[in-house]
Image 1 (cartoon, rainbow, N blue to C red):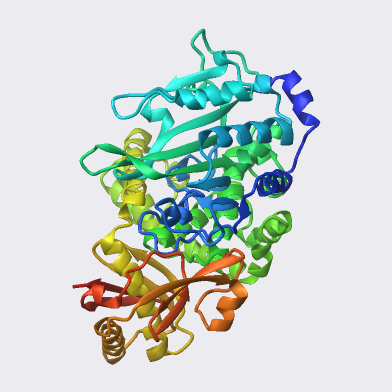
Image 2: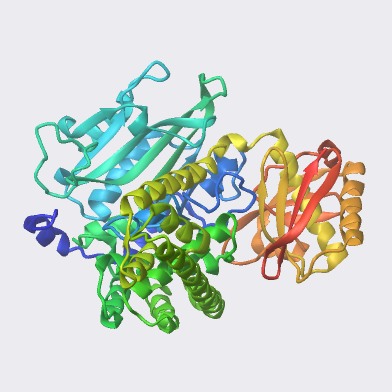
Length: 600
């Protein structure tokens, strides 16, 4: 039998909630508890240097967790589109996803542990109907930096969780911080008991045997970790929670994997129907990577050889490789995209709206990949001919890896071609090199999050303000079409992507630079007003005016020069910025240019 017991399947099958029902129950529950529902931020982060993609619900709320006033108040809830790349090469098993949806609720200096625990318990047991005996929780055990979190444990007992299902763990399990410095604190995690037998007498929620599945995490931000490693109490205590929708849908439907739910099942079945050589692993990779690619493209992502563009390219090419492995005609991609949109359009209406661009980008990238395969095959032929001259019979792992890394040539295709030529391959050496490559990729991805909340400092705030001046200056010099497509800010520089069809001239760059420095020299005041989206539109504030904003927005005005919707924070006067200098202008993707600039 599966890890889920017959008793569990019978009981939970009565609920059988679809993903969108669970999402709506969540949002309505917290709305009824005084939370404002805010829209999901795009997958492509704005003004966030810490990650390539939006990876968690808290990420777009960083300024407000640090004390900025949110226009919608102190109680917020949303569903957040997320994409994490650390485990991209693990997708294909029964649980890993790159794209997922996170449900969250926040208290920005409002309620804290008692109310947070009470609401979580009520939602799980009353709204979702999960039996109390299926729930276990974990709390922070305490150490030299912070005491044992007995208050949260007492809250769980009061709610109805018996003491023998409350566990204490250390910082590795029950403490949250983004990066090395910044707001942080203990968390409490909720686990679902699948009914699988315990792996031993010490089987607990920390065990990886599959008996316990984590379903929700509530972080209590009450400390600040400084660079020297010391902890101090925060003035504003926040609550930040995250519940994975795909995992909860799987559990409430009594399914074995997310791929068995309505989010993936129709595509999985279609792939099985089309496949001449079936593989459950390959079908999962195609279904997951196709959905993830569509979501990224719909939010403005485009394939390239760097950063998030490279991730998107890898998703599409890995998907294409496994379509080949399934022996499915790559020209069926358009039909698979249509099917996915039909499945997901109720949850993500933008997919239908952006259908044509999604198809165009994926199919163009697929066509490029076919050319890449042809190139890799030619390189393979060169190697084989040389190997034959040297009387070799084994293709070494270095060669297999070089074909993979340099030409994107799939190792399984190398193996097939090698066999046709009477060669064997050294898988052990390739596996070692591939694991090293994975580890470097994972570390690189983690490094992107290294700064985290700590990156919001005087320098990054200055660069953030400078992007507003640059945005307006570009529109003055190039025209109204030069709209922001993304930005990335560190303590050393700003990077700003904008729509423009051609390379800027030196004269245009000089004009933009001069305009920005003129506004800095004028020492213009930077002011903030809260207003409705319609009011912001009437004032002429720049913004995308799509579903990314809530009912109320913040509008930052820089003297008589710029007016833009933004979460903040910013300097109080432009004179604080110093001298603005453009270091580089280059292509970012088709129809999008990129400027890198510094403040001296």
